Image: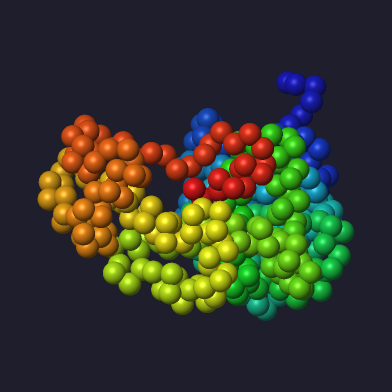
Length: 355
């Protein structure tokens, strides 16, 4: 046995991680009859977990947890099978942590009772919970993100987070915060130590701004807010490339922003019209590269909003460097990758999010 025992989850959260490297836990390499016991022991100093009725330990238990140090916060990305859970008074004394936790359900369902209040944690919704109040609940097989917030790091949010405890947070800014955290989660494994610290500062600013907004906070966080809004709009455009209604006016209506705000958000990317054209061309390229789809090029162009074959051909060649007909001749997709994975600095990474 090593002289240095691996710190428990409570140690990692309660002692404010000093090691900035990501930490990973998985039951995947264990024998099936050991998996739940190890997961239970890992979680035991924070919460008590048990198997649902009718499930036996010998059936195996899939659980994965990736922890990221964000300076004075910890972000935990987790995937686990169905379980019951409880934070009892005894567990609170044992863990001795004075934190809030923001949870974001990505897949599955969880139901938690605090006193007489029951909250349903559904995908896409943020929930705040204080780790100083007992609770109990159950979860299906889920994928969730947790952000642990030390109370002394957010003194200005104390009243807000205590009031929101165990309640879903579902307004415009909280949805932006949820999207921002998902963007962060994707990129955290690739960050250097310095970038991880900068990411932590950005997360702290976004949490403070979105949960307790003021004019000054909104101004300071404008870059992060616009970055997240840009990603949300890109996702909307990507899923709407076949719509004849897709336009700057449609986007403004969908996201309840002004045309000047929209233009400012995409000013550094050549404009929102360029973004729409880019996404339509990317979708058209993917279709043309599909060996099972042999429709005429003009039919594909029309599907993605181009009314002129000549215009489509010129735009396609300008975007990719070859014609739509040539794209058909490739044995597989040759669509350029738009995600920059080798950013050299946090600033570069922030700019590449969602691309």
